Length: 533
Image: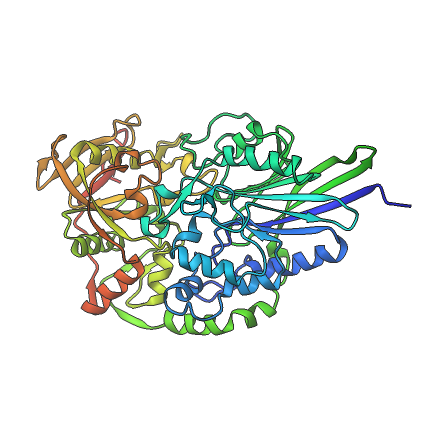
């Protein structure tokens, strides 16, 4: 008698960012995350769940010194990320925005080496007017005849961040329109019973209330996909690095497994067969924490050739610090000028020739530089593959950007300055608070948002609203990333298309000794209390 019920399990990884192993590249310590831990979890689930699909939702090829070294120095060797994913027999992968950081040819090389297809229905090759990869979707047919359609989508906001030469010849279409077309096609032409959409993007609205949680730029349209596209059963998401499970939007089961292999997303579907075919009767998502599982020892062997070279490269001494450039309290770095931030800004100004610079302390893991600087120190502190651009912007633009950064702070009930919750939830966004050099300014956090810049000068003279200034910043910020809209579309005076890691290393090598110093050109105050923070 034919079985008239069926259980399907969908497993999702997303935003792995090169974390194949379970060690920190900053200090060799064991960490509780990484694909090596998830690997044993995946194998355990497959032993008991024969109808299991494994999908990666993007941003796997960039993020650790391992991936940087492979892309920049030893790309002729086997890609360590793809080797691990091939070992796990992924069913499909979706390109994320960071897949383009090392150029299109590197992504295509990785896709060619993959034993699984890459899917994205809305990344279009201008030359062919077809999706960049072979197909926008795949169909998996189970032994009992259940047909499962898997559609790939990628955030269309990539041109706002990525280097133009990395995405030359590509068009990033609206994911919602692409989904409407291809979900309908899969239902009508492919006759699929289940539709899974793997979208490298997140949610622009609160999952429970539907209220906007960010500016509706189109970077994240997960909520709109659930509301506007008929026929989606499961929406796999990412990009925001959030841990989301157990919820449904308009009946669509959703999941997002944070980042760096901290969780495995799992969706379980129950189906019953009737005269009309297979009917989905139940859907539920959950997250399984990687920390509870031992790492798969085979991963060490898979990445060994590139890993050994990476570790040797990381320990190469580059130069020395005169003074103290260590970061012990990241929160204080953003409240009082710190030698490490001043060094990065001064370096950007020296390399670019611009008289004004801005940069951020990307996260709370940065430790600054000790007395001896190695490549490990550089890549641990500057984790993104940014390049530099010099923009020509007005004094009004600079003030607007400072007001935007000032939103990073809030004042709690005891009157102390704290980080605004919007920069902590749904994920930490410390990288969206900039500190500036080449100008002097004071931010008063007790003032209303939009009125916090109380002094703004260059060479002891107030910045002129209409006057144009040349400012160097990373390419992410220059594109308006982080909702710095005042920078979008501004003239690019100079484009320095070399990774900051390389620029920092070469800068220190050339000088051998760098000096820790600050000039106290900016201050954060709370006028409701006495004195400067």
